[in-house]
Structure formats: C-alpha cells, structure tokens
Image (cartoon, rainbow, N blue to C red; front, side, top):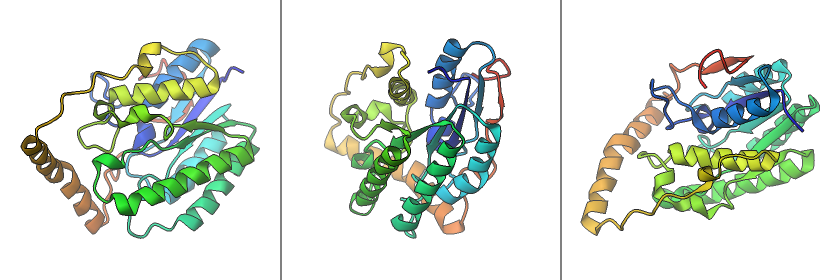
Length: 258
C-alpha cells in the first residue's frame, strides 16, 4: 500500500528533538518518514506534524487527536505517555484504558495507525527502580492494543542498538540525529517501505570514560538538564509552553521543511 497523507501526533519524540535542521528547527524521524513516503506517493502527498515537546498524554489526546482525525489522513502515528511516566502522579490503569479507546477511534477512520514500544533509555537516567516498571507496563499495553485494533507496531524496545550512547542527545532523554534516523528506518520497515541502509548503522562505540571524568559528566548533566526539568515540574511549567506545532496543517512538503 502507498499512503497519500501522513499525520504525526505526540510529544518531543515525534516533534524531532534533538535532530536539528541547519536553521535550528527540528527534523526528526517523522520528517524523514514523510520525505520517503512522498517519494513513493508523488507531489500530492500531504504531511502534518502536530507534536509538541513536553505534552502529556491527556494533552495530546485532547488537542492533537481530534485535529488529526479531522484531516482524514491515510496514516497516523500516535506516540504519547513518555512525559507522564516520569511524573509522580502517573497512574497506568486509566492511561492504558484511554490509550486503547483512542487507537480504536483512530482506526475507525480507516487510517493505518503507527504505535511505538519505547526504546530502553533508563540505563542513562536516575530513577530506574520507579520508572522502568512503568515503561514495561506501557510497552506491554501498546503491543496488546496494536494487536487488538490492527495497528502497526514499531518495536523500538526490541532493538538493543538503542543502548548506544551516540543515539541519544546530551540530555540523555531525547534522540540524536542518528537515533532519529534509526527510528525512521524501523518505521519504514514496519510499513514495508525501503530506506537508506545507513540509517540502521550504529556508530562506533566511544572509548570507556574514566570514572572521575564520567562523574564530572554526570554532575554537568544534573546542572544543565535534570535541575531545569525539576524546576519546571515544581512550578507547573513545560518545555513546550511557548511552542506551537511545526506543521499544523496537512500540506505538501514543498511548503517548508522538510
């Protein structure tokens, strides 16, 4: 099958942090996938990316899902919940129930739906004992929901290549450019569309960091990334408070990036 339109919804994962174009705006796996699908479909291919960094699952469902359904695309990607599992108030039961209902709603439009089991990034982050079980529960639910509703599952958790540090940005939470290329390759493989084989190449692993240097890097990470995140949580702010969707309307790729 060839898709004539694609709408991506979600948070920073789908917006494209931290894979920057030369002008500083973000590309990411969804833009890469759109370009490849457009090459198959032709100049009338339409693409919208409604994802905004920092958005929680309820916000994505309330704001982006109705807009995506209204566009009537052939393909919708839905990835949300990553910001929720990092919060103390996270309750998996209600989210999983709502997730299933949303996927059913998306599939009822006749669109193909892409769902994601998230890659394992907890080895580089604090709070493993709290967050890792939440990731496991959510990933299991995503797989079951995909099977139940005939959605297309992109299983990033099964790819051990994502344990490579160069696939992640310095904040240890968002993908690097190489990481986004790898996700795009998985998405296209799931869709049965070929891509550049280099997207799946894992960069050479860097030499082990001496213990003292590694602890210094950890301290810098705390100051530059973890502390600002904690401040935002305490003050009820989000990194996406002043950010709008980069491609809010369904249109051809010739309009602007990509």
